Image 1 (cartoon, rainbow, N blue to C red):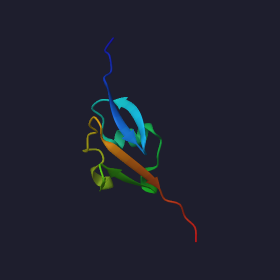
Image 2: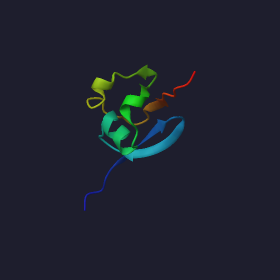
Image 3: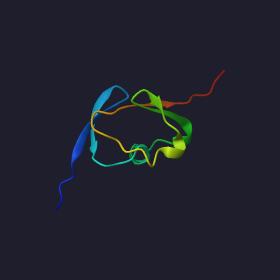
Length: 72
């Protein structure tokens, strides 16, 4: 049985262990977050949603996911 390596990241201010070698898009899908309804920041840089599948998460990355809320 192959052991899955984990890395530590900070997600919305909380430390979390995730599988190594996954894209930002895969993390969003694992978390069951609707991509169209959030803004994603990786290490203080707002991410282009078209590039989420190409952006690999690295050890100690800081990710902020902000949900859009309607109102007025």
